[in-house]
Amino acid sequence: MNGKNKISRAARIEQNWGWFMVAPTIIGLVVLNVWPFIQTIYASFCEHLGFGNYKFIGLGNYVNMFQNADFWKATGNTLLFCVLTVPVGIFLSLLVAVMLNAKVKFKGGFRTIFFLPMVCAPAAVTMVWRWIFNADYGVLNQIFGSHVAWITDPNVALVSCAVVAIWSAIGYDAVLLLSGLQNISKSYYEAASIDGASKVTQFFKITLPMVSPTLFVTMIMRLMASLKVYDLIYMMVEETNPALTNVQSLIYLFYRESFVAGSRGSGSAIAVWTVLLIGVATLFQFWGQKKWVNYEV
Image (cartoon, rainbow, N blue to C red; front, side, top):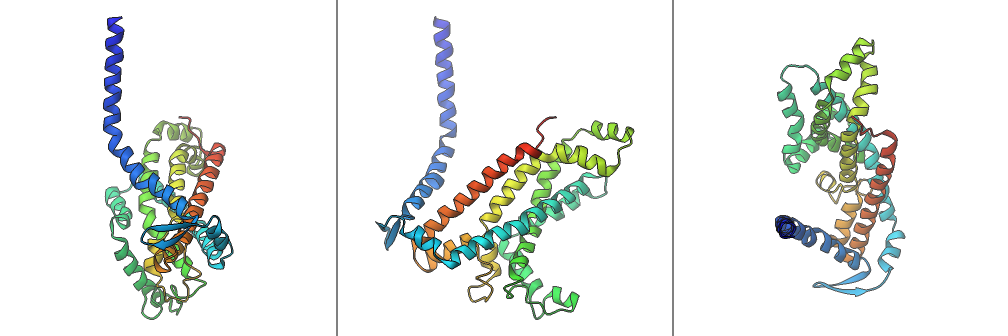
């Protein structure tokens, strides 16, 4: 009995030390994430009276939100931005990862070059791309001899922002996918080569299935980032830009409602709607992973 008591006492001490070590993270998560989100949900059912005072109005903010044309336009812009950035970005990232995984010289240097956009400050990246997209003296128009208003044309501005987003994320996603590629055993490719399988066949039968878990995680991260896009659009498109309505995302609209118009209740409702969209998209991806993600080694 004494031996069992000593073991259980030691286990309790170890468990208490475990809780003590993770307590800062749990407290930070509750204080900085969980509690603010609960406050946001509550604020979405209230009218902001100023100085932190709220008046409960029920579903009024949601009714006004669903009747607002700018809200539906921002929702469409956000979903379109995801469609433009996620598939193309993942494809290019996988292509870069496959090339970096091959036997090429200066592999480390190429990895650094592709990862460099993630290290650069977003403001600096945006300034460079605004110069490239400038309609009067931009590099892009000078190369093609055109006069396209890449940032101010309502029909083109969102695509321009998507190009910048893809360019900025390729390096980071490629590094993640490269780690997955390097975990694939070379014996699979040797056996496939002996059986006469081509490089294309090896890619679709070996590489793609084996890297699918990493690809799945990368897709979730990129989709969530696209649904939450704000800083890129904020820095690329000014408030006086005629293309703003065709470019602004849900988070950008949240910023305008909350901090420009001063309607914290309406902004909170938009934030809750965005979280629901992210949740639905994530659940859909987890449901779809059963059909194409391979966890068997």
